Image (cartoon, rainbow over all chains, first blue to last red; front, side):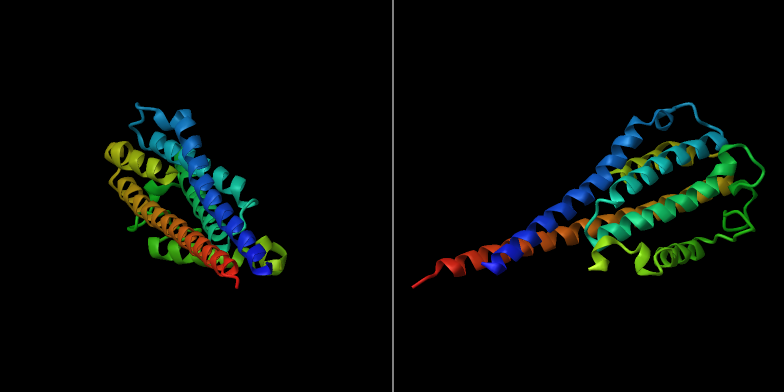
Length: 149
Length: 70
């Protein structure tokens, strides 16, 4: 009886995880589709392209933030967290270019990334992104809810 | 899904429209990063599906065992 109850709880958790993963992608998709800037056919210059990338990126960021608090699975929570970090990085990188500023990916070094204050080679960025996930939750204080139990 | 839409937009519209070679390279790099992220999301979804299926099978088995009374 007890094991059946545990199984039921486990199954409902699994379903919740599947629903959350679906919601994570579906909500973001809906926002991108609904974004007016995402369907602008006349964007030819780089600043406009950067603005479109930013618009899509921000929609995904919002979707991650929205569903993150409702997630119960560690893997899905980490995915949402990673998406948040990645998209925040991208936002910083493209913001200046989208605004037509001087510091942008066009001023970048050989890797195509902006030069200082932070050098951003793709491998460096990827490893920094991975570490920033763990760094963002160094204590139990900001850990996902299931890790507190 | 959203990553797919973003990737499609990048590859179909934005990368070919970029006027600067460096910017185009960065967009290509971004496209590769998004592809990796999408793959990771699919892996997570697949893992969740496997866990769910395993849980259902365990539940079925325990139900069968509990029904096998004397």
